[in-house]
Image (cartoon, rainbow, N blue to C red; front, side, top):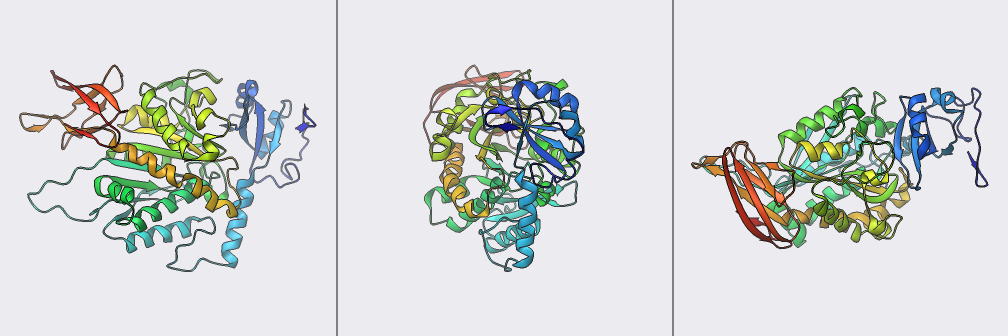
Length: 459
């Protein structure tokens, strides 16, 4: 515990089941450790979950209350683990004063039942623009709802006609159950798009020319209890197979993780954000670096990733003017993690995915919900509009889609594959001159293109 600037060792003798710093320890404690002590913490408590800290040189660790004696010899500071407390308060408020049916109410957080009702209402109110579906059920049996939004999303393609080809973009929130702002901003973003179609030029263009998909809560079980982990006690953002460093993540694959992987593979997402909380910064890959300490490890698309995160941070003043220069950072330069969704999406699908941390407090008081929406509304729009900067094309051979064709640009080693049924591809690029190389079997096609902001080059 930090007392007047001095770090001291806490000796715990059977007190953690009763309380943490005066508050009841609800299943897990949130502690701050020096970065050099992380390996000792993980060795002492393998069930712990290590998180990046807003404060440089430190990490936050979620430790089960029953395991607190295991770290009593280490230096740490007890942090306010507001998630469980705020979740209980939310449920109590809504029991006393339930939300009115068929209303749009953003004055408080949305537990699972309220979220479900909201999503159903949006799909019902905007049938020409919105389609509600689920990628499956969580470990605790709750649906992982998502909304597809696009002009004519529910229209059947006439017989003999070609289905319109549109790139797909997505937002995912609440992967950690106690990081609540992403969930709420995703719901507001759904409402913003649907209610402003035909009124706002950027909204209209997005829904005319792309499919915008929003999954507000990847961890609904964790949110109901205000816990970081899922119903099995697993941190979902340490649970994906780690393509870069396979030996660093050996946790059992969870239901939510498996559903997300299968869903991502089945869709043609090009651009994505995974929203988190606990800091205010936009992060780009890689997450991992092969070490247990901070050291930058840039993904091959680093120029594009820096541009995308910068676009998000620029119109979010608290982010842009915060601890990180211009509001962005390479994730591994902050603190490395393994088994994260960001790296898996980047290396196993055609997506460019980043992580955006939305709030210092993980579960802020509800009175600040409007503020966090105002801080992020323009950024959420501007980020998705970057889908229109790049090259859109189709690869065919002898008049048929070239199954397995690979698209490269410049000297970047990462490639994307074309859609097997149509041959279409969507490759985001920074504005400027580029060389595009397409491999179709043994055939190779090379072209030079010039990309301008906001207008895709069509090939």
